[in-house]
Amino acid sequence: NLVGQALPVLVALGAMPVVVRGLGPTRFGVLALAWTVVGYFSLFDLGFGRAAVKRVSETLADGVGAEGARVVSGTVVVVQGVVGLVSAVVLWLLTPFLADLFLTVPPEMRAESRQVFSLLALAVPGVLLSNAYRAVLEGAQRFGLVNAIRAPFSTATLLIPLLGVLLSWSLPQIVLGLVVARYLAAFAYGFANARLVGGGRPQFQMAELRRLLRFGGWVAVSNTLVPLVVYLERF
Image (cartoon, rainbow, N blue to C red; front, side, top):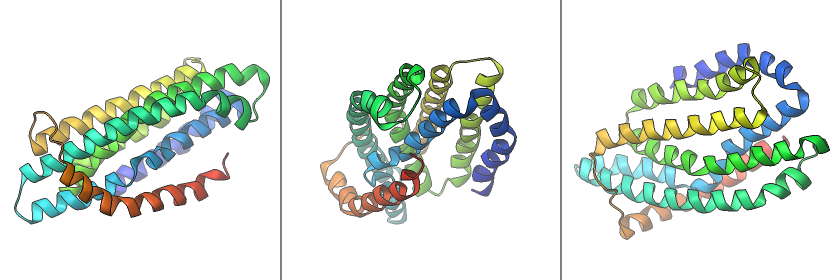
């Protein structure tokens, strides 16, 4: 866990000064807000991630094994997939408001900002599916596997803007690279999840959804309020 969180910080120390100089203050500001929006996608998680960690650990402790974990995984993945698609549409529809009215950017950058937030809308399902798959692995205490995936992809989130600056990419091209990295991370977590609980179609159960909602509802309150206080001043 320490390596998974410390490695991106070390990379950021070297990469960020180059990215700031290459993009300039305004474009880097939009990129920083893009990172913030992606980080706040936990709002759409609705507490299912933490609830899934709890439920998977309970099923394994009760001796139900992979079958119980498969039901939890399938229920969370289906719900997060649906929520991700709906949230992506909402964010895409809000893009003109975010880019033109909410953010104070120069007029010549408004079209670029609209492209950035439209691309961010595409990332929502990938972020939520990553959270769902990772939660199942954490519930099974596979922290080494989680960090083997998290460390390189978190580092890639910093290296992609650096690469974009060195190759003279536009800001939307850099954000597109970040979106692709999110979906690659979701695929990696999903592959590891399938190896843990077994392949096949996700097994959705309404009874399991009710159990997840009972615990996850309170977590969702914390997931909404705490990031709001942390991130609001950035905007």
